[in-house]
Length: 379
Image 1 (spheres, rainbow, N blue to C red):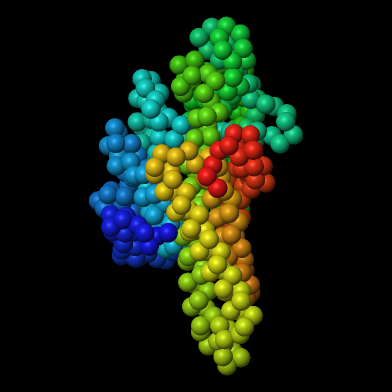
Image 2 (cartoon, rainbow, N blue to C red; image 1 turned 180 degrees about the vertical axis):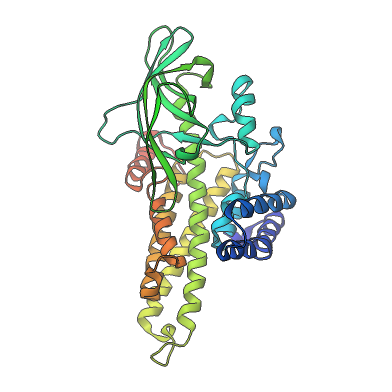
């Protein structure tokens, strides 16, 4: 649990708390008041985050980052989420993601500009649920010819290039899953539609119609695509768990303040047994989220394969945080349903976490499979 953090991690948590209150909250207030626009606020957050040494925590040392470990990132992300600010997305610099350890053209043309924040990348993984339009590639000389469809590319509408999971057909070389880097304006790529999800994210669907991609754009080797994809998703799951933990912490404190105030009945809501029972359950869920998060992050920090534990942490944290927010809305009453209320926004955000990084239902199946078939995990 957090009480067992090293002095270094405790100081990191404290410095981020000061950053949230002294720098970020006033900036968000200016954004809300219209005295600063979103671009200006983002620029100031990034500049201050660089000054304080937070920006590079998600970036490799070989490209100038500080490359924090899983536990330090869990502490940082939980603390930021506990501040409940929208502008925290600008605190950390873009990580290399699937492009980590890439070399040559991929490093110079894609990874390094990505790290510097000059371009954006999106991960094209999800395909139509009916099994149609599977994304496949066949060799043609020095190129791949790609056909298929991706139905939900997170952040894809604003991306400059995409990391696309394809299945390479056997032929002149080995087959199997592979990750390809594809430019936004590649001939044969069509963005079918851009859309906004209920949490405010902007995404897209895309179709590949005889799209030609150089074989030099393979990340790693053909056959390594799925492990690379799952490694990227594994990091995302721990990130979601940390954000869910901090969110639940904020909601518990927000609710404590609400039920402690005088009520129109003459007494505070917190004096009622039923309210206390609901609030107690919120505290219970939050404690469990944090316990699971920190145990999993510590294992990951020790280079333990946490594929199963990370899935468990993500599923439980996302669902429990959703229940905490739902209970807070019930205690908060009708005002909490109004657009713009912090609980209304968090209700949408926590609901989206149940699908991000793998849906809860699918992950439950994978968790059982991991133990029964591969003896993975330390549950």
